[in-house]
Length: 290
Image (tube, one colour):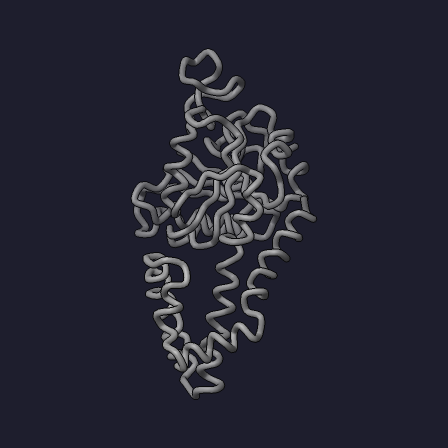
C-alpha cells in the first residue's frame, strides 16, 4: 500500500514514524510540504524502515497532484485553512484520511467529491505505536469500502471509487498498528480530542512541574527528579487502569500522611477545575475554529 502525506507536520511525522516501525509497514510512503523541507527530511529519516532494510520505500515529492495520483490513501495533514487550496491541486479518486481539527467529514468531502473521506484524530503517542486514535463512524457504514470497488465491482464498494485500495476494516487495522482505535460519532470527536489529543502536552507540563518541585523544594538533581517522575507515572498509570476510579488515590493517601497533604494542596489550588478548564478552553478554540 502507498500512503501519501499531504503535509509533513508533527502529527503526520509521528504517524509515519509509527508505521515505519510497525511489524508490517506500508510498501511506500510519500510526503509533501509547503517548502519547509520537512518532507525531504522525513523521507530520508524513514528510508528503508527503522533497520535500514528494503521493506519501506519513501520519497519527498514537490507536487501534491503527483502525491494524490500515486497514493492509495491520501492522509490530509495540512492546516484546515489550506483545505480548499490543497484540494484544488490534489484531486483523488481513492480515499482521503483527514487529520484536520474542527473540520467535519462533510466539508472535506465537498473538496474531494470522487473520494471516500474518513476522519481520524490521533495523539502524538502514535509515534511509539502506543497512541489513541478516534475514528469518526458516520462517514460510511461498517463494512463499506474506504476505497474499494466501484458500484459494479460486486465488492460492496462506493460508486465512483477506484478499485483495490483500502476497505474500512483494513483502514481500522492499519490505524491499529499505531495504537488503540476508538470509533466515535463525529459529534464526539472534538471532545475526545480535547481529552486524549491534548493530554500528552498537559502530562508533559505536569511532569516538569512535579519534578521541578523535587528540585526546588527537595534538592534533587534535575535529571534524577525527572527520571523518578516518569517512572512513577509509567507504573501508576498501569495501576490506575487496573483499579476503580479514585481507588489508587485512596490507597496511597493514608490519613494524616504526606500524600494527603499534597492532595489537599492540589484541591485548595483548584487542580480539578484547572484540568477541566484546559479541556474547556481546547473545546472552545476548536468550536470557534469550526
